[in-house]
Length: 143
Figure 1 (cartoon, rainbow, N blue to C red):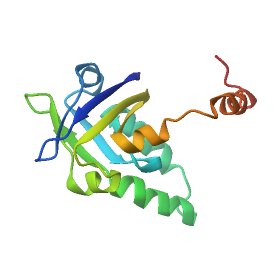
Figure 2 (figure 1 turned 90 degrees about the horizontal axis):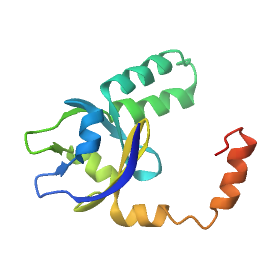
Figure 3 (figure 1 turned 120 degrees about the horizontal axis):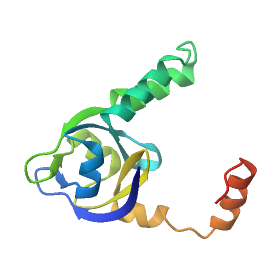
Figure 4 (figure 1 turned 180 degrees about the vertical axis):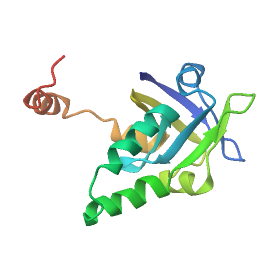
């Protein structure tokens, strides 16, 4: 399970150091794809295979399913960590997420999110967290 928030920078070649706690869970190879809300999603190979299996069961006659598949799967790429603990983020994914230099890596249960730091700060303003918590309770999620 991924958890925690880490601030890092992307070098001029598009490489990002992955925190050691995340590297342990990801393994040597993993998948990075376009995420929701303008960030990147990172999945271990095992988790990615589960997602693919679930999506194979979705009807491809659904226009929304096809559109989401193109967004999510066509944007995906296999990545590896180099000897210095870095991953090369493809330019197309960096451009999608507005990633230039400063980023936040956030562990979110079964995946990692990589955010442009400014966008993360805007997104993580939790003025309405009490209301959201009530909505979660109505879904049966309690803490």
